Image 1 (tube, rainbow over the protein chains, first blue to last red):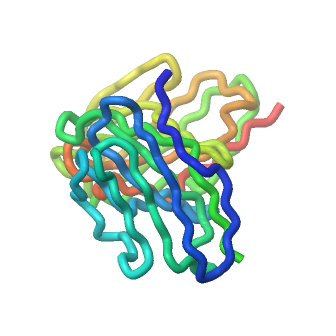
Image 2 (image 1 turned 90 degrees about the vertical axis):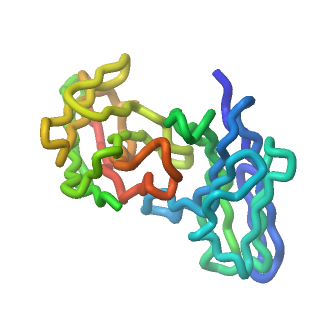
Length: 115
Length: 112
């Protein structure tokens, strides 16, 4: 079964450093999402791409977070500078076609600890 | 946005049927109801999705009454491996994912 790939699985970084997460969606999936999940809470959408275009980044803290999907396939989420409150699991997800209502599939997540 | 309310936690013994109810009084006409399962340190896994009446797959059943203001996820004969957090989401799957808002979920604990 195809999966959404994410790396790194775990990352520890110091406050004020830069950190990046990579995601490779399921092949053929045009829609890609980045979510953040704080321990004990449900996932919160940060940004959504349709192919290479951002369609929703209303919850993305743009002063420190950036996301790109240059060729409409894999994607990178960057945080610079990292803050203690950014410690969370960052989930990437993808779906075949937003307009057809296909199921959203999640990756295993990338755990970030900021010290 | 349709807000969902579900129990914070539930306990069950192995082999029993578990029913988790979700309230969504403000569900919109185009909204579907979707359930995800999440194990610790893993991403959410799709379980089932429905619009009305009853949907069944190899894992669970989803019961939706005519007014669609609530839904019930039914897990037949749970096992220890079903211990997880279950999220009920309500939204238009053809729209932006921001309409598919996760709540805090229901933490199901299955014991022997």
